[in-house]
Image (cartoon, rainbow, N blue to C red; front, side):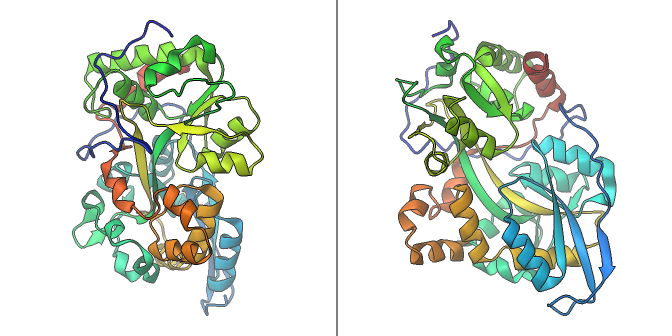
Amino acid sequence: MSDFEPDRPAEPVSAPGPLLSRRRLLVGAGAGMAGLYLAACGSSGSKSATGSAGTTDEVTLNWLTWNDHYLNRQLADVDKQTGIGARPQLFQDNSDAYLKVKQTGGQFDMVSGDAMWVPKFVEDGLTKSFDLGQIDAASELYSVAREFPFWQDGSNYMGYPVGWSSQQLYYDPRHVSVAPDSWEALTDPAYKGRIVLYNSASDLVAIGGIATGAQEPYSMSDDEIAAAREYLKAIKPNVLKLGAQASDMVTSLVDGSAWIVLNNLGTDLLVKEAGGPDVESVTPREGTIGFMDAEQLVASSKNEDAVMRFLDAAQRADYIAENFMENGRPLFNEKAYKLLVDQGHQERADRFLYNDPEAATRMTLKGPSENEQAYTDAFNEVFGA
């Protein structure tokens, strides 16, 4: 192991992972975010037509999202049923999506967002809340998903709840003989060039904070950020790359280029089903981060009604159950869980805590840092070169 040691001893916790107390709602994020660029994206298009749902205008919505938020069959079906298409554009980090929406105005209609980033979008006027009750598909959600206090905005909701997951370490026991049950374990020189993490400045610096004993990983002091930066420097030689999507972590384990990755619940089965090795999971004893995500309505979109109708058609149980089987992490659609049980997949769903959505409230949730520029600077100092 390297000489790096956490500042405080960690309390051991049991698998499938320590889900830390939810931090308070963060406000304020700086403008200097790493790896951001203005998307060259056309505005939403409309054409005169009659869809199968009887609409007289077909619309194609521009959607900033991750690749596990949709299925191609789902998009094709919804377009056929409603005359509303969707043009997904992928992004890596919430800060990336934030800046794209901020700089492109109404070029986007929807944007996916994690946890405490959702209130940030609303507070800064980039997205707007809506009546969740106007979307009939919302009746299929677990009740807890419709009641998260940090997504409530009076009688409205800040986004349509999709799914959640804690972030686990997955490792290949053929090469990693001792479970990496602490963040300090990632500094071991035996793992040089064999670790894949997410390309997210705020989240990686927050992980550095967890590793070094910070009590509020997304709200650290300058000294805590400095300690987190030193941790990231200690693990940098071992980082093969920073992945953009959850699927990048799976691929890295399947092809053997990575021995350890940080990824969502369900990665072990996805790796095995893709022809990869048997991998195991562990949650660092110091704790970990997690997300719950939502689809948000961009405030300057001219297609609000189409967004509502798209969500109503796309967020139905059969699509959500299929998405779970393909991508693994738990989702908030309760009717889809019942469908999975009927299809013989209860063991798989329960293994990924699909039937325990309350667990999503016991994580250190992803969000904007209170000093985004300092987090970005720390990240760039380590990984920007």
